[in-house]
Image (cartoon, rainbow, N blue to C red; front, side):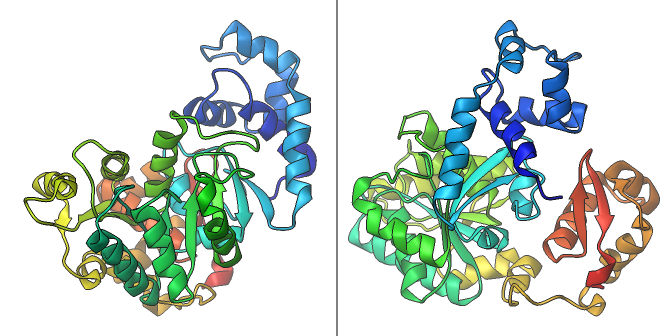
Length: 368
């Protein structure tokens, strides 16, 4: 489904509504189906709406909406994706608190690549920088896209490692898409946009406020199959990203270090909690298994039916040709909800199915 300009205006209008975060936004979308219906009713029945929201629905901030659309029209590399946009990344859309709107500068198509996040200290050791660059280069050559947060230190080294081997990298911003923070990474941001994408859930004009960065961290991990922590102090934003990854059901990897290096303590803590200790990039690819293998295929390649396991092919057959909810698939297969959810994610990543509103899934027969 592709939004018209008028549809997009309603998405942006609700994005700026007071008290409506990602979860509430999705609840309203599920309840009304289309946002124009919400604005026409102006009184979100069945929700714990505030008077401020009801007042806003009667008089939205169209000036701010027009400002966002002016940013969109300013540069052909500027894009706005909603949860229902075909280009919205599949892994991120799985989250209950997925950003309802993404602002992208660069190529939005790369957001659908299989990604690995590389995060760590803003003040790393020389060895930490070298590790981040080397791991990023190796994983990029294996077919993964590197995601990080454009911060000083390990983030920048991860982006640079991918760019060094002419790979693709994605930077998730803690600002609006028209701001680069830190400013010293302006050239790096330009290179990333040329070979990948800058992405943020924050509207144009948003500055680097402290509360923006924890929100950004959940998007970094949410875009990715797993998160690699290179160096981190015991209390750091990198560990927040790792915690988000665990909560999202994604893999967490950590590189160990010297017991005398304070920046190794965060990694050691993660390993004690179950993160995989990695010494080489191949350790990560081995752990990712089938999904890591899938990422080595060209993004334009369409896998033949024989590339599916028997279990996945059977699930596809049981779906039929109409949108179907996951609980019905659980009943038909006799598998657990966790197993069916994992299989559906793989089928969607490989292009056999698409998710539809209301938690339903549909086959794409033209890909078979």
